[in-house]
Amino acid sequence: MWFKELKRELGTKRIEMITTSKINDSFSIIINPFGDVFPEEDPKLHTTFYKICKFIEDGGFFFCTGGAFWAHQNTKVSEAPEWVFVKTQEGVQSLKDSFLYKEFGIVVTGDIFGDKKMVVQEPLEIEVYQKDEDKGYIGTLIEGDTKIKRFRALTPESSNYIPLFREKQDSSFPLAAVQYGKGYLMHAGMRLTGVKATEFNILIKAIKDIINNKFNKF
Image (cartoon, rainbow, N blue to C red):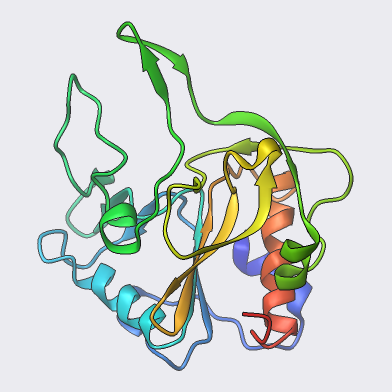
């Protein structure tokens, strides 16, 4: 889905599907299409994760879709994704027990419990908008009143972030750029359900704007 749509939108620009072994600075932007799961060569030593960090630190843009670095999987040895950290309290893992927080300082939205019952569960439909300063970085992504499905969106408690569009009252930022070294982790806190989904088309527009402007807005 990602490859087909990016090829259609970006035309002759060089696009290819790669394995984790090919992550290097010959690429300007890398997109993880697997939501809040990422492919990991070594789930014990986290080899791929630190390779991604090095790619960003050296000036790359790494696009996370639907949350980021919450779970990982080596499909050669594991049939299903596994949580990166497995510490739990009453069966629930803290959102701060993730690489997203520990390495990038990103605090995200999540399910909310009260009296041992879930009172808010993501994905959660919210209204979003853009300020002029957001459009200065990424162009116009939001037209008029727009609703999206929020999932693990970046919150104001996070560090070194640039909002690219916002939940009403600025309570979360479903798309934000987080500076790390010379590059950026592009964090998309949305649920993507298919090629026709509003959330997917917003991300395609964002990626297209970044590439067409040769990364010069950041």
